[in-house]
Length: 496
Image 1 (cartoon, rainbow, N blue to C red):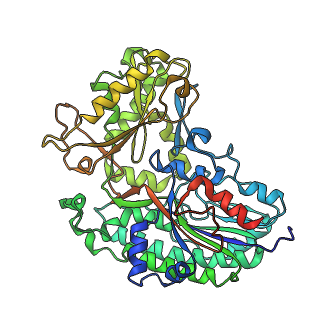
Image 2: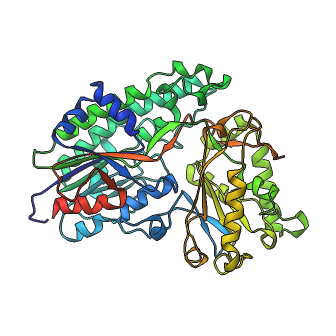
Image 3: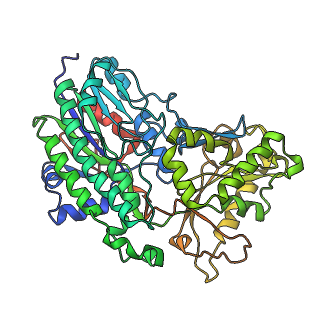
């Protein structure tokens, strides 16, 4: 173990909304955070949430931009195989690997997207009760801590697939809310036991329950928002506990964690992105690109036998009744449903007639250009890349509802020139939607397709801003804004 006595306790509140945190602190609803702030500083955190929620944790973990690590979502495009692959994280090198190599003991609990190092000291606990499921199994290092984990009460949301109630089931939604609140208590107790047992010099404790409850319960924070003016959401106001109740329990558990460290310990309490009102996410970008002439689906006669089988599977999936879908997801392991879903997540394109296509997403629109020299079946020449991107941008910016409301807030290009695009793994265009996209039913002016929505059970979706309450590591290099990619370096400076 390093002889250095300096310590850092970092508490990650996954997807906590900064505006709500500030408001509740001002209203004396979060006494632990208010006390911490009185001794420290509140910073804005900038993470690449504009690329996608899947980009933020790899950026924090590696200290690199998405253009370098290439991760933007749970499913990423593989141009060599013209298909998708599930994130596994084995290629990422976390900043705490250098700390561990220097003899600093490290403890990590349930950080999203975390790679496992197999630490011999400290602790690594992955997928104990996660929001995102990747491996689909609990992983613990060192092995001697497995007994301690086994003694901990079961997390209410850890068995099987995590609960996914929709607005049509207020009772089930209340059960999820109660499970998140109780899970925070159990997580806090487990974290304190791990800190006492392993005594790491750098500890990173993640509360994933805030992420999950934010997606399902944001309507309890802003019930009067225009997004919720729908008949199917009318009964949601009665759900208890509310998201504020869950935030209050989080504050209590953070207060208990702070009691385990001394006054010399540097403390980071942070969220890399937040939450805002929403109702689902649009799923019409693929058909839209086909209607606009940028993509074309393969004819039945032009598909291989495997391709035909996949097309049949996709059609069956689209027309399966909701009740049967719920039974399917409740019965099978998440990793199994992910494996079965992968072949059907993209339609069967005729790549020889497809210049651009959409990628599956849970929030922003992602568009990939079928670029020659990058995609295995690419047809867009490098000199045509800029023109195709400009055509796409113009077509998207013109999208409005029948009433004239704009549907697109912003279109972001991730590469200005084909030379840069040829070596990047990110989508070429990222579409940020306006709130008008959540209208039900949604009618797009001049477009024949009938827009569909995915994950319509969500009443909260990610906002772009994060925050950090920092105590004990404030120096002249720390301004009012902290980039997510720089947090690891700041933590390292606080330790060595």
